[in-house]
Length: 113
Image 1: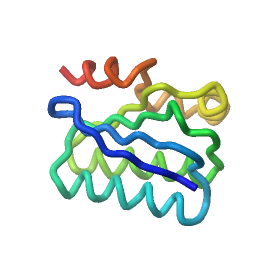
Image 2: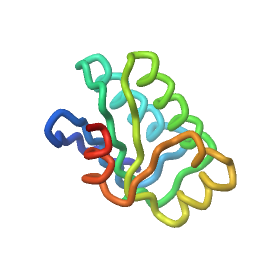
Image 3: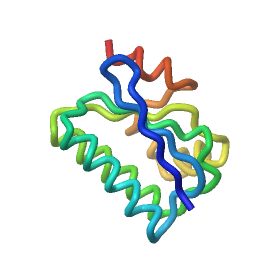
Image 4: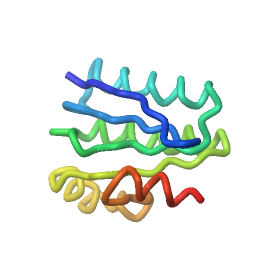
C-alpha cells in the first residue's frame, strides 16, 4: 500500500511517499498525485522518499514519468531523503545521474532558490 501526503514548504509542493511504490494501485495513486500537482500549477516539486520501504521497476519507471511530466509543464522535480535501498536501486540503474537528490526535504526545497 502507498500513502501520499501533500505538503507545502513556501512555494514548493512536497509529496511524502509512505509504503511501497509498486505495480498496481500504488503507481496509479502516485501518477494521480503528480498529475494533480501539475494541474494545480506546481512548478517546484520535491518527492520525500524517507518512508518508502520498497520500489519495483514499475515504481522506478513512474518516477521517471513524473520527472518528464513536471519538466514538460516547465517545472522541476527533485528527490529527498532516499533510503539506502532506493538509493542503491537508482545508482544501479544510473537514474541518480538524472534526478537531483538531497538528504532532506528542506535542502531540496531550498535548492530551488
